[in-house]
Amino acid sequence: MSDTEYPLVLKAAWYYYMEDYTQQQISSLLGVSRAKVIRLLEEAREQGVIQFIFRQEDAERMNIERELIARFGLDDAFVIPTPASSSDLRNSLASAAAMYVSDHLRSDGYLNIGYGDTMSLVLNHLATGRGSSLNVVSLTGGVSYYLPKISSEVFGMRLFLTPAPLVVSSSELRDSLLEEPSIRDVYRMSEHADMSVVGIGGIDEDATVLRNGILSKNELALLKMQGAVGDILTHFIDANGNPIDTTIEDRIVSTSLEALRAMKNVVGVAAGPEKVAAIHAVLGAGFLNVLIVDGDTARELLSHASESA
Image (cartoon, rainbow, N blue to C red; front, side, top):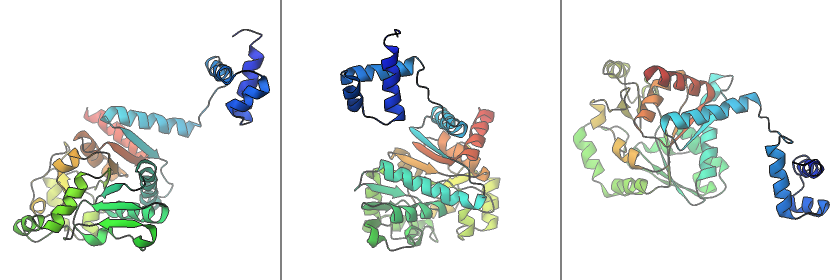
């Protein structure tokens, strides 16, 4: 950059970045072409006339997201700040997931959504915050888990729910239910949805399946003894993401892991130190394309991955 051109570079950068002038306005002001303005702005960046400095916490967040994407072969990652209160974490995570869906799903798109407390919150945030219509397809049975706390009709949300319990009394009954046309129709819809959002369950005493009465403490203890680290769509998996052979596996009305892996744009939403092993297993098994997580959990996850390598 010559001494004679420097004043033009400086003025173009100042007007563009500090005064919010458009490139066309700068062109008229400086008496040069718009193409010349573009070149001047490029020169300002290359020569350090204008420098971008991210806040430390934002730079760290971007680095963590990039490391998650590279480490686990993801298409995207979204890391939110960890709230000061652990009680706020689930709601913050659900709000971030709803925002991600709204930003990436077409206005009349179809969204698969999984079972869990966080997923219920995601659905509620979408119902209250998304202005355009939304089509929601359930990935498991358990109709009550998919009903937002407010009237969905007011917000244009259409729910396509699996008309069956999440867990039934026998494998024979489960197999019969899966042959019902109304259930098969919902399953077929899920195969063609634009995006899927799923939670990842832990295997601790605060696990959703325990609080909702799906499993007893004894059953949860047995799962731990069999090597379970968590669940996805109520399929309990080991540290390698392989399903645990249990009686509940034969009695759940839920999208299979094979079908989940074949879906496009699968977004996993989870946080908390008790879920790190489960998140790692789900990512390692290739069930997700996108991960939404908080900063503290993301750091623990990357540390866990390094130790497991």
